[in-house]
Length: 88
Image (cartoon, rainbow, N blue to C red; front, side, top):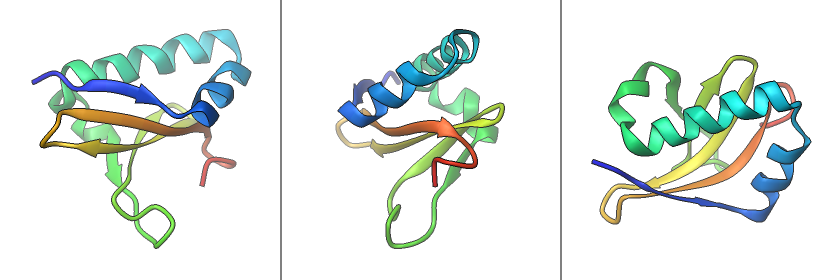
């Protein structure tokens, strides 16, 4: 089951600010998430709290990708990308 990927403008800007080696690794994991969601289940966590209700996060080393998944329409929208200290 393949998901279609969308990025919010803020997420693209955050991704562009990350050093190239980490950025490449993060992009690879996002693509892997869209192509084979189940393969990354051990790196995925549902977020709690009012601000991020309904969002999930993907762990990629010290970086986090915050996204919303719509299972009915097979869409993943990336909302934030950043270092774990700054993303929440």
